[in-house]
Image 1 (cartoon, rainbow, N blue to C red):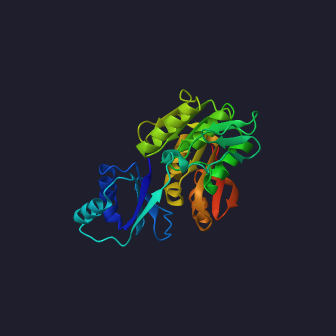
Image 2 (cartoon, one colour):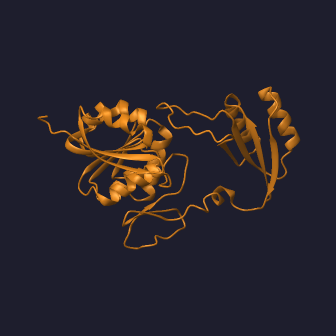
Image 3 (cartoon, one colour):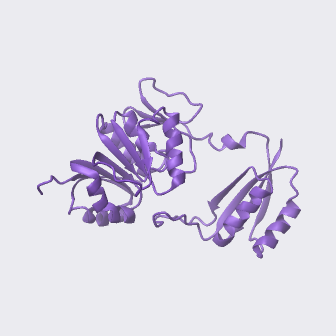
Length: 295
């Protein structure tokens, strides 16, 4: 069946209503993109910020009445659109075609991430099966890659691990694949927790990886905590991380812009000794160790 792709620019206050209307009118998929190259570096925990100008894309069967759809959108939003672009598309499985450029990726010496349909390049490797999804974290971003490379170089065999701000669960799965005895994935987004459950099951780790909202319960202190989130939450969470870790346990922090690293480092000395820093493409990974109990 042939398809039509509709692109329309809108303000943030219009975006959700437009997306719902497109879905109600039969859109097979609706996506949001930044229309003005505006990065979003520091959203507040639990928030879902949008760009100042949003490009909304809807994928429709070719027999949709676009004239009637445009009229409905204008009536609902009470505003004209700054753009309205319709493009015919060839017939293919668009639900998976956008993943064609996502190929197996290696992190360190033995850790690989492979999307569905791609066999592991090395049968002896430690392989994570993962498709891109709604939750952040497929290994393509430097912050995630830095954490995966650290795990590859420091396999948490026999350790208890917390992945704080788990997103897709990629770090939790990597820790479990590399020998962790138990893994707890924590996130304040229920969608991220569901993505982590799904990905853990895909990797046959559903019985090894538990998921939790931050305040559902207080786990026993662990040997290793990984937090790939953002600088401001990392600063605020320093005392909580101390309570979640055993004395002399390791903390790995990522999601930090290079110019924010000093502020994060300065927040941790009451509880941690910061022991290492690695930078890539303007992002930083920090390493620390919780101070002994008598300090």
